Length: 456
Image (cartoon, rainbow, N blue to C red):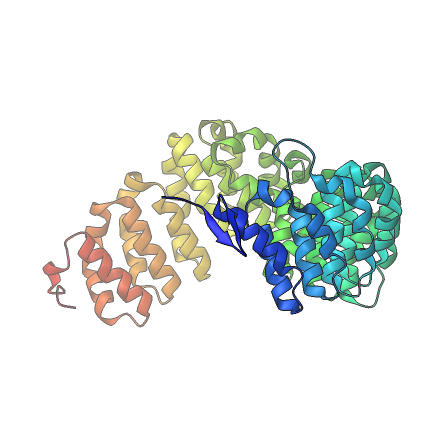
C-alpha cells in the first residue's frame, strides 16, 4: 500500500510531508483560528520533523494574533533534539520581544523557552532579570527558574529582587515571590526570617508556598522555622498546609528534634519515631528519658508506642516501662504494657495485678485504658477475666467496648467467659456500636446460635 499523497498539485512520498506542507500553507491564512490550528498541527508532526520548522515557529512569534504567538512559544519551550542542542538555542534573541507581550501567558512561555536553552540564553540574562518584577506571579516564578538554568551565579541577585515582593498587598504576588525564593537554594537562606513571617500569613496559599519553600531550601532553613512549622502541622485550618508542614519537618535530624526545646517540635519527632517500628531502637536512650521525664503527656504516649514496637532492645528499659504503667496519662498504659509483655514477660503478672484496682476507678477513661492494658497480656490475663467481664456492664460505653476488646485479645476462652453478658449487650445495649460489636464477636466465635441470635 502506497503512502504517497497528492496535495495542491504535488505528490508527496509520505503523508506526514503533505501534512507539514499543508500546515505551512495554513500559517499564511487570513483567519487567525486557522493559523492557530496550523501552529499546533505543525508541532504535532513528530519531534524530529517539527524541529525542521523552527524558523516557522519563530516567525509565528510576530503574528498579530496572540493565540498563534502563544502556541508557537509552547512548542519552542518544549522543543528538544535527540542528537544535540535544540535549534532554538541559536535564536534566543528572538524570544526577548515576547517578554514584554501584554499577554502574561505569552510572557510565561517565553521565559520557559529561554530557561530551556540553558547557558545559550546568557546574553538574555538582563531581560530575564527584569521579569522578576513582572506583574504576573507565574511569570516571576518562571523568571526565577529560568535564571537558575541560564546563570546559576545570579541566584543571590535574583533572590534579593524576589524578596521585595514579600510584603506586597496582593497575596498572589507574595506567593509567587516565595515560590521563587524556594528555588534559589543557599542564596535564599538569608531570607528565611521573611519566609518564617509568611508562615503566619492570613492567606492559606501563601502559608503553603512558604512551607514548601522552606522545605526546598533544606534542613538548615527548616531548623530555623521548626517551631512554626510544627504549629502549622497540628493546627493550620488548611489540610494542604498541614501536610506540607509535616513534609518539611521530616527534613529535621530526628535525634536533634527529639531534644528540641519546643514541645510541639518534640511531639512531632516523637510521633515520627513511634511509626518506625524496630528502627525506633536507634533512639531508645532518648525515648527512655522522654517517657520518664517529659512534661508533655502526648510525647510520653508516643515514646511508649515506640517502645512497644521496637522489639528486644526495649527490655533494657524494663524499670522505666514498669514506672510508665503508673503514668498520669492513661493512654500511656497500653503501649507500655505491650512493651513489657513482649520483651519482659516475667513482669506481666505483676503488671496485671497492678491494674486490677484501677478497673474500679471513678474515672471512666482510666478504667477503659486499664482493661485495654490488661488485654495486651493475652493468654496470661485469663486468670484475671472475672473483673474484666464485670466491666461489660459498666455504665460507660467506652469502658464496655474496651472490655470486649480485652476479651478478644485474651482469646476465645476469654470471649466465652463473657458470652452471656455479650448476648444481652447485642440486644439491649443503648449504644449502637456496642450492640453491633457484641453481635459480631458472638458470630465470629460461633456463639450467636447458642443464644438464639442467628437471625438478629
